[in-house]
Image 1 (cartoon, helix red, strand yellow):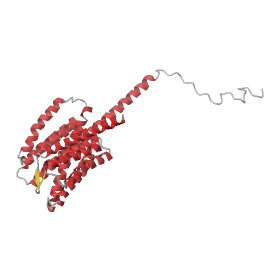
Image 2 (cartoon, one colour):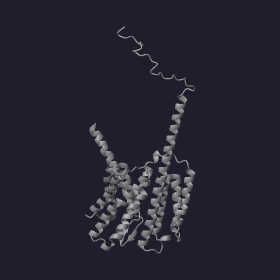
Image 3 (cartoon, helix red, strand yellow):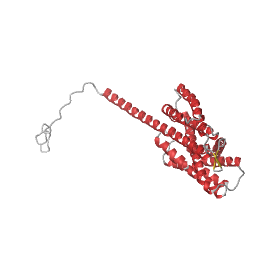
Image 4 (cartoon, one colour):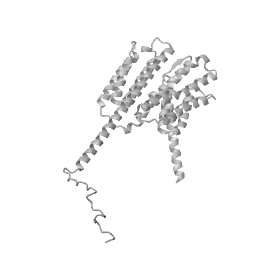
Length: 343
């Protein structure tokens, strides 16, 4: 019986590891579709595998780290032959999401992102702080093995770091929302959601490909999505806008036309970063306020029910209460109120 349980546990672990590795590899291939070149180094403006890795760790725990390492190995093998330097890249790509998971759990992070502190923790701990590891290790290895000039370290490092951080900010919330979707009520405002989706599909390409800088038109849509649909709407809207803007930037179209590669990278990442922060933190604030209001309303309703119960249980006319007997009115033993042993 014990052997069967251990065998089942090993089978489940193998399936989870394979699923995480395939998800990481698929996200990596998807991220490599659009690339930018900075100082001769190729990087992706959004690196989805970092977001996939953090989400898998938050859902499955540390046992998914093996699948993350295997997925990173598959991505590297699809780009170049295996070399000893691969060990450092695997270590950096695996250590960064693991550190993000450990820091988030230490901070009391909740996967539903229903509190402002959860959004802030994901931004500053999971994305901006933890992804320093992968960027530093990856670019440091390139410089160490003479595959990148020393003076190009900081531009490439910045591009690498921001790409990994954008993957966490844009992909991780969407995956966590999809994971908890079965716990959410059915969408009652489907008509409004459909209208928001159609307007987003019309406005975002216009803003991303127009020669006039119209990227600011995305922010009213984010506010609308956050106010009406909280994290579900805002994260999906932010992800769609980021993908379209990344395609336009790599094509050097619209507001990214006639810019240098470094300027394109700075403008795109500034837009993606501010948009992701707006979507995540605004939806977290709105969700937290709504949950607080519901808690207060529930407490008030319970208080009303208690008061009604107490009122219903009290008789309409109370019988007159007997005045307390004074101590001097009670017969004492000394006055013969009770027999004594002398009698």
